[in-house]
Image 1 (cartoon, helix red, strand yellow):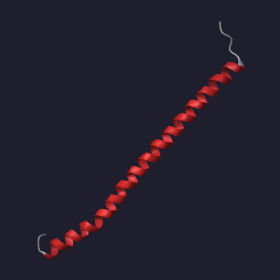
Image 2 (image 1 turned 30 degrees about the vertical axis):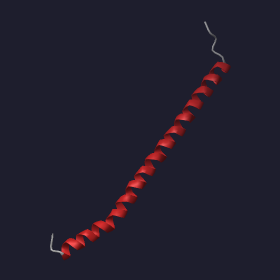
Image 3 (image 1 turned 180 degrees about the vertical axis):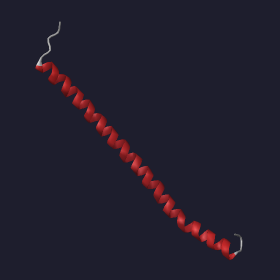
Image 4 (image 1 turned 120 degrees about the vertical axis):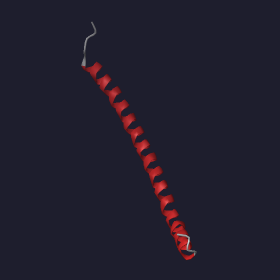
Length: 65
């Protein structure tokens, strides 16, 4: 039977810690990408407010609404 030693546990903990660090980094990248996409969508919405407002004014002047 394999002997459980401090070195064995240290190796396993190091491997696990490295894996966890990689997963945290990946989660950070995914979060950043998601936030950038949301920011881009919000920017487009803000840009569309002015043309939308102008269109409504035009409809009112032309008595279309």
